[in-house]
Image 1 (tube, rainbow, N blue to C red):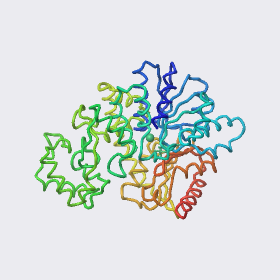
Image 2: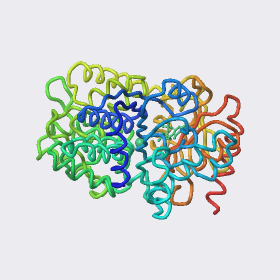
Image 3: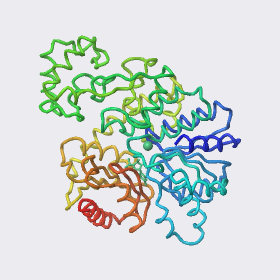
Image 4: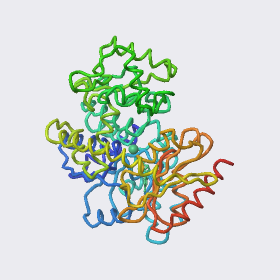
Amino acid sequence: MKEAAKRVAQRLRDASSVMIISHIDADGISSGSIASYALDHIGIENKIRFVKKLDEALISELEAENPELVWFTDLGSGYLELLGGLDVVITDHHVPSEPDEAEEEPGEEKAAVTSARKTLFDFSEPAAKKEAKSYADSDILQVNPHLIGRDGSTDISGAGTAYLVARELASELKWLASIAIVGAVGDLQDRREGKLTGSNREILEDAIESGAMEAVMDIGLYGRETRPLYKLIQYASEPELKGLSGNYRACMRFLMGLDIDLKAGERWRSWADLTRMEQRHLFSALSQYVPKEELLAEIYLFPNEKVGTPLHEAKEFATLLNSCGRYGKAELAFEVCKGDRGLALDQAFNLQGGHKKYLVESMKVIKEIGIETMDNIQFVHVGDRIMDSVIGIVAGMILGSGSISKDKPLFAFAEADDGIKVSGRSTDELAGRGVDLSELMGRVTKEIGGIGGGHNVAAGATIESGKEQDFLLLADRIVGEMLDS
Ligand code: C5P
Ligand code: ZN
């Protein structure tokens, strides 16, 4: 990817202004911030726009604006066939479009198809690479782990790919690697092994070397900085603490028995507020419920940020970014990533408070509506009761909550401005057995219309209203086929 990053960097350096388009989630916001910070640093004028998704409407708008160069971060690779009319570079980790699929597009899209195909082979096959050079200007340059056969859901995030380019633009910007780590954990890339692996590890080294980040082995439960201790335990889902998770009274009883002050004055204490001794004591008490190894994870800290705030730990940092993005305020989070610790940060904290309440309410809505089951999948349709920008998070929370079966992927439908948003969530176990939701979204939308993509365990699509039943029948069949083959 280094070679690809160099080429993208060169292309950016040659431009006098760049339009950055990024995704509204934590990884997208981190990506966009890295891109913009690096361009600012080397004096290239840039603007940023955060979008929920890339589609034809957005492309038409961009074509009308006719920017000199567009830098797509954390999106783009899945939609190469749409990008023919624009000058673009892409740093992304989503599954790239299949050239064969694109080939079936009619007439005028041929030009884009050629460039998509060429790009796909560009960095993976030396022979094609040579040929690609002669097309220089019409190429879509991409940094994407899939192009070198790596897994985009664990090896590197959108922010990581943007960072590889930022580092080529200005080698002194190594601290931006710490923002790339926020993007990676925001996309749950550390989940499978309890730590970041692959290219993410190299990026982590840069982050640590710059002094902006530390990696420590510590309790892996989410919320170590800001959650009151009882919530840290009550909401624990990875790993689940049998007998404690989900049970407020049991958690309180457990904590009361430990001789640890749960409050400092009026304020609930969090894990980060505890002394080392108290942490050790609580940890060993918790290890009665789940093996120590499962309780431990590698944690990524920002030593220069205030302890006990979301900015001190990468996962909570990512949640803060997500809360802004999902409510149409990605720009606030963007300012926070680029260093604003004043007004933007205050507003971001405010939004986060609202986000937490919204998620709790949304979980109730789903429980009320109920999950329906088919042969190979399960689904829920929430109508307009949950925002389309949040439905993916809620679907992930429901599947991870232990309150429904994890044997089948879950699809959640919500009304959106431009049709029906579907969010699909699955598990590593199902992925290991061949279920790939990104491929599924591609196949289904090809059949019934709409646009979709993502990763094997988390993917989304927008389809026409009224096509939900068709979607479900197809998805059910495809998952069945994937499990059989
Ligand atoms: O929106 P949701 O959280 O369900 O998206 C899951 C994943 O699928 C994200 O990585 C998102 O970028 C991707 N996605 C996509 N195309 C869509 C919708 C989602 O690539 N139309
Ligand atoms: Zn991402």
